[in-house]
Image (cartoon, rainbow, N blue to C red; front, side, top):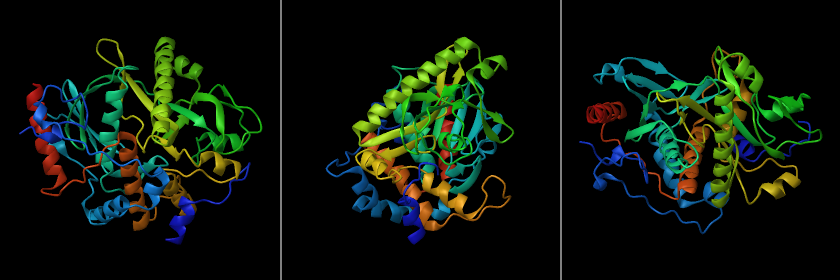
Length: 391
């Protein structure tokens, strides 16, 4: 427990260092064609306390962690729907999602796999449900900025999306000087880099400092890891046209600004995130994959940020950074073939933080799943029914 507390409260920072209710997401438009009675109700979460109080010491925290402990052996680590659902043509296994080809649609299953450093580190109970429902909440609320590929959400862990041509570029948007991975802004800045992905960063900045403006640091894939790339290289290599890049960049910055505003209204800072886009059959640029989840985003507690920054302390975070730090302290997560098992206390804490973030942002209570049947069986049935409905 002592090491967990150190990771959650790091030392000072040195300047150079039948189609049922599960068919719909809460408050979502994505089930509009379904019976209104199937829409699940959301439960209001009290806002009387500061987010950090609810995060570190609350009855809800104890309730969730107890449920997490009893579910450690029931994580959704793998799916094989191509063997159980008629009509699914193939499976692509991503770090977190299993993606199935269903003709005109893609079936995306968000598992409980936890990734960082371009590999899977652990399985986190309820994580897949949290990510799926968080993304659906944001997809629904960002349609004024950009259309998205979502068609239907037939299960807590499932999204059915329009098939589109995916741009091989991740739009990483950053608002603060931070990070611990090899491609993070703080890592490269601390090594002396002052022009990163065509963004000029001024001298004299320190870790956790707010940037003069939000910036995009795109990445693309090389083998199994992300590689920073400049806008000019993206166009020259034919990954996107200039018009496509300009449109996606504008949307990414607008999404991030909107996400920052919503997060701040709920006592949080959206520090950085990443977006992915694709082109639909009609040429429309669509937002895909996930939006502002604790997997794709970094969040800090807003009310304590300024005092901690001025005192040289790390911000209080609500993301997976402490798990990244644990692995960096105990192995080389980029090069070691076999990684140590994440301690149970870290797994439970991360599961709680993901749920806490969902409840804080959406102001609704996360529904802990009841294990009436194996998750794979439930998902197979829900997907089968949904695909029949879409035919």
